[in-house]
Image 1 (tube, rainbow, N blue to C red):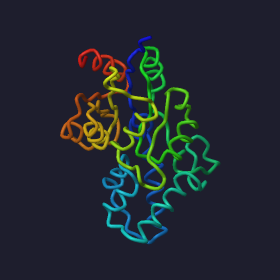
Image 2: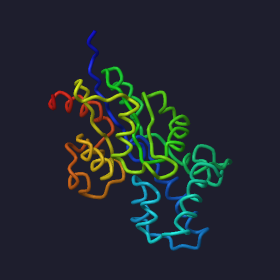
Image 3: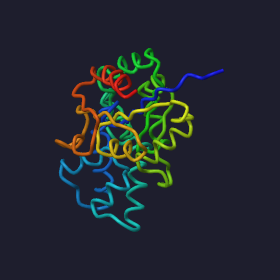
Image 4: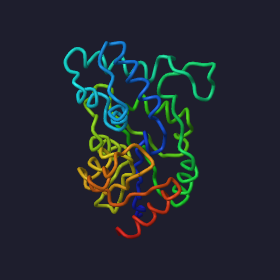
Amino acid sequence: MATTAKRIVLLDLDGTLTESAPGIIASVTQTLTDLHQPIPDQEELHRFIGPAIIESLQRNGLSGTILTEAVALYRRYYSEIDHFTDPMNPQHKVPGCLVNSVYDGIPEQLEQLRKDGYLLAVATCKPEYQAIPVCKHFGIDNMVDGIYGASKDNSRINKDQVIRYAFDHIGFHSDAGDRAVMVGDRWTDVDGAIAVGLDAIGCAWGYAENGELKQHGACRIIQHVDELEGAVEEYFKVSR
């Protein structure tokens, strides 16, 4: 019996589904403060959103033992230590990953995409052991069919590696007619998609710098969350 070809939408997490800047920046700042390292300006701190943490720390001059310490400490502040004020309950402290929120309209857009028959999967450069609890906390795990992220040992950190990893688990076979598109807000999403032969829809509501998504080759850039389902539908119709 012939099987129906999959239509897969890969979704970045930070800056695409969730407004995660406050928690990431707070965790980076606290980590660098503890290690007596310089704190970057706000523009550079926002560049930490998207790439793997080890790459962002390296870009800011950390290497060797101090880099290893910084990655480990950041991960503790981000996912383990109840250090930051909970935006939903100021009387409580939470890890950085919960100083975060789902963009308005995302649940409705994902619900409609699933009704349209798409297979939805989170594909993030955030380590998977961090991404899954974040998605569960905000209910995203119930909106998608899979959550795939970077590895804890840094052997899988780039977006193209994460996409291939996701495809291995999903069972993506282009020769059987399966098709996919990446949806994300940073150059890492676009470059990662292109590296594996996919197109990327850029999300301007996230953390990309001016002109970044166009420069890296996003096939389309959408300005608002409520454009997501329509953009995906149009992409799959046009790219048949």
